Amino acid sequence: MYRRAETFPRTMRSSETDLTNGVAFFTFLRPMVDLKSIQIYVKGGTAAKSGATLIREALYRLEYLPASSAIGIKKIAETASTTSLFATAEACVPVAYSTAGGYPANYILRAGVIYAVGIIAIGQTTAAKVRGIIGVADGLGPDIAWQLSGQTDLPAETTMAALTESNFAIWFGVSR
Image (cartoon, rainbow, N blue to C red; front, side, top):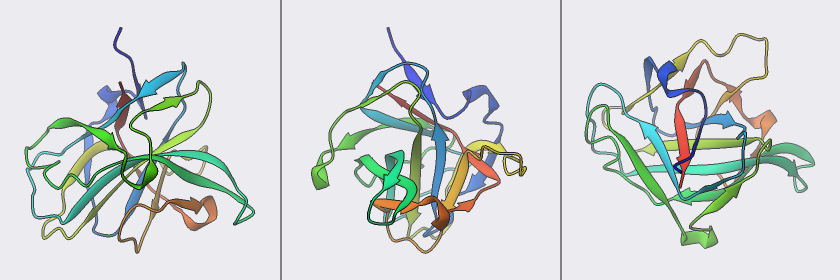
């Protein structure tokens, strides 16, 4: 049986937005069943892009961060930089987790636990486009999409207070 957890149903990813250089984008998900994850999917936009010096995705877990005495997200798995990720328009390419930096090659997502999937692009001359859904920042909560500006790579952890609510939720899938 093939299982995947998605940030929201992929049939809803009807809009696209630019991956702005140096901005880490995060979309939250809560799996309904335990799931072994070895890769992350993201859906590219309508135009192929290249030229980035870094494109990375990562899996985070929402938790208490003792060093900050605050709730935040902590990186638990990441991919290697995949600068060719958006070389083909509308591609939905799985990228496997990397063991570099001591992260695992696979991770068991637990049912009911809140996770976030993040992505960052650095060095683009023309921004890559990703698919998702617009209009998620309605003030009603809970918020599912956040961003963090001024980054050179995805952070190891960050507090929720440091994140800015985003009006665009990027579609991600995590699967085996």
